[in-house]
Length: 300
Image (cartoon, rainbow, N blue to C red; front, side):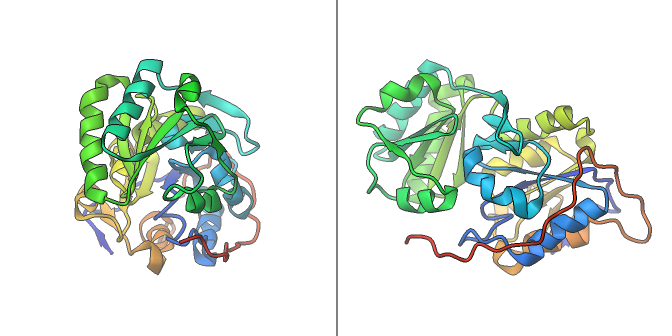
C-alpha cells in the first residue's frame, strides 16, 4: 500500500464504492470488511455507500453494516434512506435518454433501463442479465420497446464484454450527450448514463449537505474511472489495488486489492485514528450488527 499524502487528514465520513471495493468480485462482504466498518463507527466516523446499482441492489448490505446514512444509488441518481424512502431523485431528460440508447445500440451493445427501483431489459438471456439479477437480488422486467419507459429513466446502461468497445462508447456518448447527461464506466463491461447531477462527484457534495459534513472531511475509496469524481470532490482519496494505473494515479493513497482485503486495510492504515488523535463526531450513528458473508456463487 502506498500513500502520497503526508500526515493524517481528519475524516468525519468515509464514502465507499461497492463492487470491486467494498465487496469482492464474487460479491462477498468479508468479515474483515464488516469489522472495519464497525471500527469506523466505534471511532465516531460515519460510513456511506454509493454504487451504480439501484438502491434495492444494496439492501443486503444495510443490516450487516448497520447503515444509517443515505444510500446513493445509480451513481447519485437517487438517494434513499436505509428504509428505501426516497430523499432525492434525478431523472434523465427525455431527449438525453433517447440519444443515449441510440448511441449504445449504434455501437452494437445491449442496453438496460432503470426507472426508480425498476429494471427493464429486452432479453432475459442477454449477457450479464443473470449475474446482475444475482447481484442485486431482484428480477428485471422484459419490455419489447424500451422507448416506453425512457420518460422516467434514472439510469441507462450499455453492456458489452468487449472492454475497448465500452471505452469507445463512453467517449462517443460523452460527445453526443454533452451537458445533458453523465456517461462513465462503472465496470469494464458497463457504461452508465445518468442525469448530469448524478455522478459520484455529486454524491460527495450531496452527502456533505445532507449530513452537514465539510467536504474536506470526507474520505472516498473506489476502483473505477467514475470513482475519480469522488476523489476530486472529497478530502482524502483512496484507490483500490485492483484499480487501473490511471485511477490509482488520481488518488492520494493506494491500498491492496479487493481480493486481498484492500478495503479493510485502507481503513486500518489511512483512516482510523492513531496515537490518540481525535476522531470526528458522526452525523448519524448506530451500533453495528455482526459481520456476515454472502457465500452463494454467481452465475457465470
